[in-house]
Amino acid sequence: MSSQKNDRKLRSQAGKYIPVFDASSRLGAAGFAKAIAHALRTEFGSSGSAVKHIVNLTSANERAVKNWLQGRNGPSGESLILLCRHSDQVLETMLILSGRPKHLAAKKIGDAKIKLREILIVLNELEA
Image 1 (cartoon, rainbow, N blue to C red):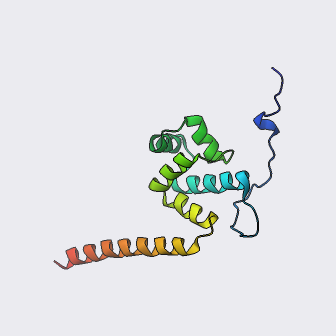
Image 2 (tube, rainbow, N blue to C red):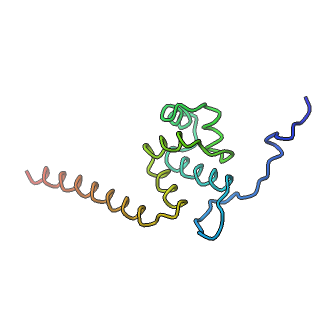
């Protein structure tokens, strides 16, 4: 079997780092895929069970999810929305990449309020 033009082995390996948002530069597909891969690995890990868990969340093909975790491809819009529903890391990455630091700060404040309420409930139970 001969090599094809679009064979994965011929793909460029540029952009192996996690991109930092810079309003003056363009992120590109490779940077987006790497950022989402980092977020997914941070949240779910990169094991086989992580792949199956992400497949269950998104109903995506298992091979596609493996490509997301390896940073080869990024998820489609529909899959990205489903991932944001279930993963704080992916949501935060999307807010950073879209240049919305105020929204990220608001999310973190909301998360902190929820944790504080949980702590107060436990403290009240301990006092009783």
